[in-house]
Image (cartoon, rainbow, N blue to C red; front, side, top):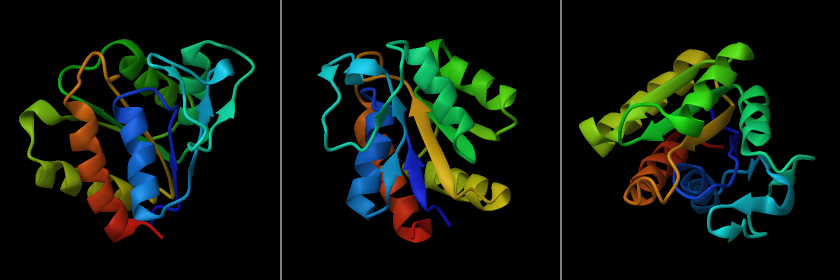
Length: 156
């Protein structure tokens, strides 16, 4: 059962994970860069995030991978940039991770994959990561919808 969503608050998949947690009534948190830095300006205060000492996005990426039970990375294509770093940090800290390429999946298929990943790995704190909004603008709405459905079933 998912007890908490963790994310860094960047636009796109990260923010969609936080919004899904809020919509489903599941606690959320995580690390964000000093100054609450995101590509669209400061991350809104409604997101319960803790600033790192560094303004580096890599610092928050590593801390979120480390401080969760597992990570789901949602993109519309291959792993690259920060999404690739997320997978590497999860490996470094011995945490399971799942990459879902939504360009080749239905929302129902993605929901089933997330549910199976959570159940198989006993994940209570799920880190949500993936492409930022400027790279894949269509991702936010899909990720939010997928995760709200999963959290309504497995959140608590």
